[in-house]
Image 1 (cartoon, rainbow, N blue to C red):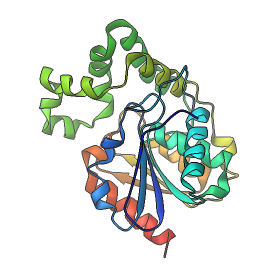
Image 2 (cartoon, helix red, strand yellow):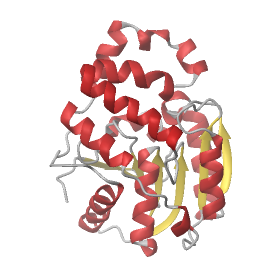
Image 3 (cartoon, helix red, strand yellow):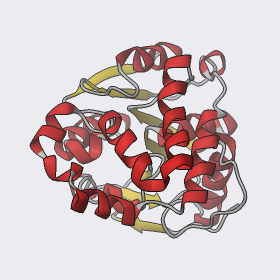
Length: 257
């Protein structure tokens, strides 16, 4: 297990918030106040934020092993998982490895497989990183990450000042490469997901260009899960935290009724 920075807050049923590929636990700040009544665990995955960045690549299995070890250390015998993008993949991998440890899954803006189109999108980030470092990787990635509505409403994100703020929050470039290589190692999980008997909610952004609705549909079909749209791009919790939190809360309330 990598040494992980984590934070636990709130009271109630236990819920783990799983970051997207390059996020820090602070990325959940807009959502956390909207999920009162739950004990929330959020953490920097290996290579993210202030957590350890050992040799890579950081595969879904490695992330899932870290998560299971962290839950063991905290004494959490059961929890629901809420995963965004790569965090959703980690949630799926962890549930496949230890299905009895989890109560339910919320999987947002994610996929259970990589096709050539998605592989090319994320692969372009890796090439940009190697060519021009974090600044070029961000310039290439941002139009895929945020929906058009959000970017049009927040053009400051695309300015030099906005990019500088994002660069300051990004992981070390070696860690970024390991994170990307780990994501690109994803094997098709769909054939194994039929074995999971966990309640699940699959969310997708109507403006998500990176992993649009067909990926969410394939995931929902494999899990027998509910499918719901959000008025966002790929970064749903950041673009519309209220809509995201309302969908998550409604699902969790039904699970814990």
